[in-house]
Structure formats: C-alpha cells, structure tokens
Amino acid sequence: MTDLLEQLRAAVGDAHVLTDPEDVAAYVVDWTGVHTGRALAVVRPGSTDEVAAVVRACRGARAPIVPQGGNTGLVGGGVPDGSGSQVVLSLGRMRTVRAVDPVAGTVTVDAGVVLADVQAAAEAAGRLFPMSLGSEGSCTIGGNLATNAGGTAVLRYGMTRELVLGLEVVLPDGRVWDGLRGLRKDNTGYDLTQLFVGSEGTLGVITGAVLRLFPATPRHATAWVAVPDVAAAVALLAVAQERAGAHLTTFEIANRQALDLVLAHLPGAVDPLDEPSDWYVLVELAATEADHGLDDTLEAVLGEAVETGLATDAAIAGSRAQRSALWSLREGISEVQKVEGATLKHDVTLPIADLAAWTDAMGPRLQQILPGVRPVTYGHVGDGNLHYNLNAPVGRDDDLRAAAAQLSTAIYDAVAAADGSISAEHGLGRTKAAAAASYKSDVEVDLMWAVKRALDPEGLMSPGVLVPD
Ligand code: FAD
Ligand code: MLT
Ligand code: ZN
Image (tube, rainbow, N blue to C red; front, side, top):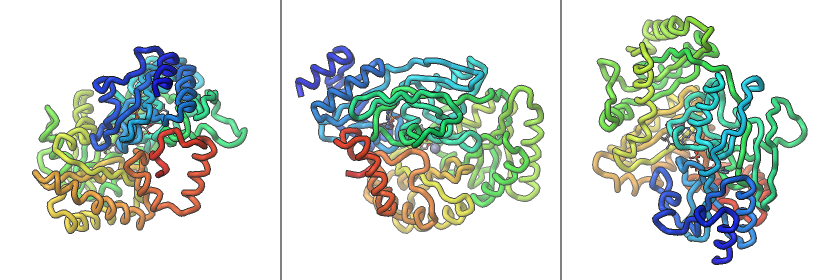
C-alpha cells in the first residue's frame, strides 16, 4: 500500500493525499452520523486528468474507490466501509464553472461545484438553475447527479436527470468519457448520460456536466397553509395545479410534529398562524419579470381552499423576509430533527391518490411496534414523496434504535404493497441497497448487476453501495 500512496502523491501532490486521522475524520462519517468508516486515504484531485490518474493507480493496487462530493448524502453512499482499504476520492477541489451560455440555456461545470454556486452563476447570467435542496450550500453537482437528487422544485422542473444534457466521466478503467454535449436532441444510441445519473459512484467518477438553464423567475407568491389532513393537501394540490398551471413550482407538506421541532430548535422560527393545525403545506408560484398577477392567482387558490374546507388558514408572504421565514420552517426540518435526537429516515414515494390512506394507516401500525414513536412527516407531496421520518419517544433514543429494523420493514412493506418506492430521491447508498433488492424482481436485480459488471468488472467502484454485495 505504500506504493499506492506514493503513486497517489505523484498524481495529485503530497498536500492532497490525506492519511492523518484528524484530516480524514470529516470524510469518513456521513451527515446523519449513522455511517462511520475508515479510509486508506482521502485523495483530492484538482482536474479530470488527475482523477483519471488516481483511478488508474487504485485499479493497479486493486484498492476500491468511493467518490465524494459535499458529503450531504443521507444513505451512507459517499463514505467508506469499515475495512480501511477504500480510497475516498473527493471532488472538493474541482470547483470551476467552465462556461455559461444563456442563449443555448446551458452551464458547464466541474463536478465539485457546489449547487448554490451553480444557482449563482445562472443568476449572474440572467437565468435560473432551478434545483433547490436544503443542503444546497454544501452539496455538489457531482453528488446531485450521482444521486439523481430531487428537492423542492421537482414539481415544475423535474429531478436532476431532467436538468442534465451531457457528462464527463472517468471510467473504472481510468479512461475518460467526454460526453460534454449540450444538445437537446441526440438519438445516437444508448443514453450513456442517463446511465450515470443515479449510479451513486458505482459506475465511474463524474468530473463535469452540462446542465440546463431556464428563464429567471424573480416573481414569487408564497403561502404557508393550514390543512386538516393529507387528503385535503392532495385535493388542494389539484386546485393549485388547475388555477396556477405552470407557475406552480413548490408544493411541500409538513405535519405539526415537524413544525413543533422547528419552533423548538430553530433560532428565530415563529409559527405564522394563530391556531395550530395537524398539517401544513408550503405553496409557491414563480414567474418571470414580465408575468404579473401571481398574487391574485395565489389568493384565488387559497380562497377556494378555505371555502371548500381544504384549508383552515393561511399566511401569505408580503416581503422577501417573510418569504424566507416561511421557507425556513420547511427547510429547517432535517436539521432540527437531528438536534432533537435519534432519527430514522424513510424517503418514500407513493401514487399521489394513495398518500392519504397510506399515511392514515401507517401511524397506528407504528404505535403498535413502538408506542410513543413520533412521525415527523414532511416532504415533496406534489411529487408523491414523503419523508416519513421517525423521532424516538421523548427521551428514549435507544428504544428507537432497537426497534429500527421492525419499523422500517413495516414502512417498506406498506410502500411495496401500495406500488410505491422505498427511495424517492436520496438513493440507496449503503442504507437501503439490500432492502431495495429484496423488493425488486429477479429480472430487475439481474439487469442492475449486468450494468455494474459491464462497466466495473473488477467491482472497485463503491462496493456495497446501490447493488448489495
Ligand atoms: P455526497 O454525499 O458526497 O455523495 C452522495 C453519493 O454520490 C455517494 O454515493 C457518492 O459516492 C456519489 N458521488 C458524489 N460525487 C460523485 C461524483 N462526482 N461522481 C460519482 N459519484 C459521486 N436530497 C434530495 O434529493 N432532496 C432534498 O430535498 C434533499 N434535502 C437535503 C437536506 C439536507 C439538510 C441534507 C443534509 C441533505 C439533503 N438531501 C436532499 C440529500 C443530499 O444533499 C443529496 O443527496 C445530494 O445530491 C448529495 O450531494 P453531495 O455532493 O453531498 O454528495
Ligand atoms: C428534505 O427534503 O428536507 C430532505 O430530503 C429530507 C431529509 O432530510 O430526510
Ligand atoms: Zn427531500
């Protein structure tokens, strides 16, 4: 292994090969704190050629590689296992916005560029890069592509896979595939770009991407709406879609338990409504500068909702500051759940028509398994995607950990029975690889392995992630 470390140092420079436990610490534990591994080394290449040299050196030594971007992933895919034999390949130094073309509507970036910096580059060119996640100040485009991230604007703009036109990838054998094309139309065979989207570091290292830009939408109309239940939230979605059409950008849900945690732990958070409600939705419409009338549309949606009993009250943002205060109630939930204590995350999608019945049935079922367990339910209800996360009964984190497998199995069985998915947007990583395989048909698992073996025959890219060992 000394040979490998020497080769890595020669490839990227001494300063960018980390082996000291203190330097390595932040790279081997994930955001949730659930996955802690050990690394042979953390390597920080500064260019695509350096990534290729690192991959070739690791291949020669048969050392597995785990690519890492901002390390905000929620399923443990970006951290090494406990063997101490894996090399973490961090894209953190590859942060160049290579080109912006407002007319073609494209931005070309290094994979290590932070999502918020892509948004800023688009804005500086008078355009919009619409992907929006609570982690956008730290997560990277490479990580977003590798997980096919979703977020709060999917309803209007789609998942990451709908926002990418071309990729540059270092393959497991060290060759570079230059697919950095910004074409909207390209039917010249298998779609290799899409193959790498959502591959979670198991097929190669994404080093660059051409992403889509959209017209800027500086006008917003935003409301925090109290709704009696999930069924009302889903019915309100239909009203908003009908009245607001393409302007409807965000339609997020949160239960009272989620809001209570935000109010308890997020400094400055204030309940914008007088009376508590069991459920809330955050609705946002967005439009270009030339588009007027958003406020009227939102008021019409909310008026109809209150008249028909779909909503009981609403707070409409009257300023930028109020808009960001409403958003912080939603975006703060992940962070405050961690502050509250042990958390069990479930990122599920269901057919939208089944969301209400599924949620109503799940609560009592979980109480039977662990009385007092607290579902902190929120997420992208407009996409059928719930973060059906659980906090422990107050002061009993160990009980949640002890019941975790039984609780998750009950949730996943109910998701499978409703023809849903056990990973809507976070991917499978190490947390869910085995569970996902158990719900897939043999044919589907065989196809996944066929792809994996074709691209990574030696199994050196993120072993144990996405496809179980
Ligand atoms: P990492 O965590 O570093 O890695 C994630 C996976 O991608 C790993 O498997 C890793 O090996 C692989 N990978 C990373 N970079 C590359 C690369 N260049 N080439 C190949 N593989 C690579 N996710 C959502 O979808 N929607 C949300 O709304 C959302 N909100 C979040 C809010 C918070 C507060 C947090 C902490 C996370 C949230 N996430 C959300 C999850 C996370 O931010 C996303 O999964 C994000 O896409 C991960 O990006 P990253 O750069 O941090 O990737
Ligand atoms: C979010 O939408 O806030 C995250 O994807 C959910 C999570 O942290 O579980
Ligand atoms: Zn989410």
